[in-house]
Length: 632
Ligand code: ADP
Ligand code: MG
Image (cartoon, rainbow, N blue to C red; front, side, top):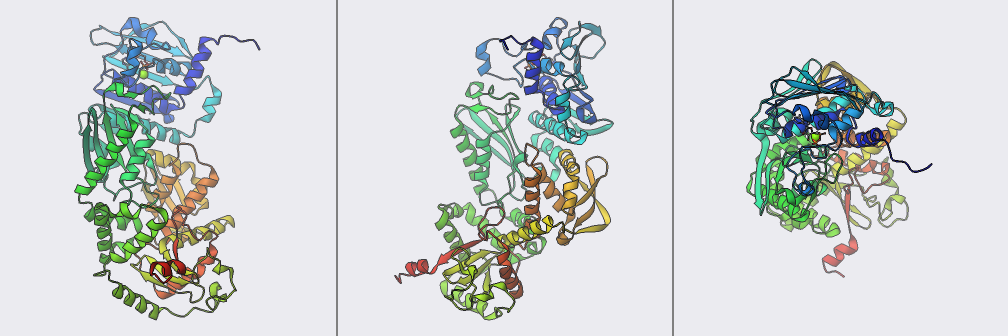
């Protein structure tokens, strides 16, 4: 084929592909224009998840009649005058292609009236063809209606998901912009339903509360710091609130919502030791810096930016949070929170609460950071530290030994049925259970529980310290996976079906993956709005709060940007269920329970790691002990 110049409309369609992916993209672009226009009120209304209609009405500066055709033409913008401006962007838009791109793949109607104009003017664009501007009646400001998105690009249209899913994305786009501009009054309507009504001029905490609940908003910790020209401010959540994914980390650069891996990493680092593995901090942070210190023109939807000095910003965020945590009393709240997080039984155990408090205080003093220094030695050191803290009055060796002795005394003999029984005496050649990487004591097959969270066992090659939660979780996971594969997960019908309130995005995801959830024993139905009705529940989770488990599963469902593969999803969900159902750190175990737990250890292929990738056990070899006690 000879080389040809592409016709403009095809160029626009290709460009539209980059900017307009789904109704949420339309909402984002139109809202950004309205914010750039200096509006103090922006009303968004959509029909059918935005696929039939997206309407955004603002009371901003409007567009003069003679500029209307330019507004919908590609590469026409009022926001950049010369090329240098590209490095001093102070508006949300600047490429001048949004309206053109949207008009290319929809039926767009734009009405606008600047304050000084006697009346309004409208222009229509259908599949890229613009009408002549014509006078119309309209209030000051701009109203844009986008109907039948992708009516002329059937392939794109096919990629749209259910109305609910699309609305989920769309309301997330709305959330980001409304969080970025708390001074503006925003509303969002889906069909007849008003989903959000956010009065203007709110403080940021207030606005955050409207989206994510007062409970969370009130627990937020204010942070603020300035380093040269860079100002960082906003809120981070008390560790008692966390999520199973990083979607609740909202970063704003001059009102623009951005994603930044490096800053997300800094957040994770700042919370290290405060959150369980697999949990992510919640944060709402604003970065302000002179526009020339950042390039916002590196990503088609401007979601990512490039900071001139990313390393310095990383350190600023990390040290701001670390300092804040050091001077904030997180302990009281965290002790209840860890209860939430882990399980009801432990939450009422004052000794355990005290222990957690102590650990947090230690953490704040920087101890945890020291424990963490190296992989191998780190594990060992933290196990050591575990002996020293906790409810026991002191960490002297004699006391610990005495406790160990007592522990051993009540440990019942091995039952004949346990599979580890085969290898009777130390050094016997028998079972594969005694392979060096399967170190549980087969000889006396018993262990002592310490601090209600670790099991200490003698093994042929030394001493093994087992994380009871991690081990149980791993065992349950394997059992669940096998049961699932043979189709044997039991559902228990709830006597009274339970309505569960979710966010729009969560409800959409839950309903979309309804069948998969049902296979896992979780039966849900739509119940109007963002509420779903839970009618059946995995029988093995009977002692857990169904709504909470559903929340957790749904968080997993939406934690990826791309729709997850069914297999991965399933795996995630099984992990979540296993984690929920497993005994917790803090649960006191009866000797029989310890035996049962250890005897099931053969179920696991990879005994060393819980599904989250944490080790289930640490091994101290006899040689190492001998060396440390200077016997060799
Ligand atoms: P960009 O926002 O990148 O400039 P758009 O295609 O989104 O490009 O908009 C083109 C131009 O139309 C803008 O530069 C602005 O001048 C004008 N415009 C668009 N929407 C509005 C609005 N809601 N109010 C006032 N002017 C608008
Ligand atoms: Mg724009």
